[in-house]
Length: 154
Image (cartoon, rainbow, N blue to C red):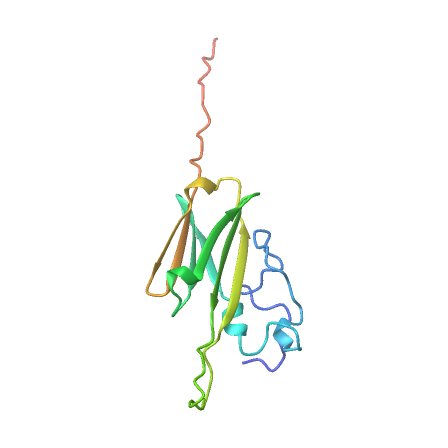
């Protein structure tokens, strides 16, 4: 563990230099200043999403343990933007309950991704199984260029 705070994050978590991510960059998020995403909700508010490209599709996976289908939204916006959002509410307190420790995070999250030109935005599919959301965006088939053989005279 490093004693120096990470301002820009590591390669997997930083979206500042990712041309396809539309997440807002907050340079103070990792330092824990008031008003940033640090604190009790940071683990959920900064939901990590993996994006891999296969020959057939773009596939997004997000770990969302404990969330129900109705608490998660997957939307497609203009300009090839995929938006994944949701909210986990805090457990309601009973006046007779005394909390000893609260470690599970709650709050809202939203991630946005600009998809490349080859994404079929009208065929996006999403499924959730065992707390893992999978969003599949099929890709346009690559058109093979027509090759015409030219006869060489001589």
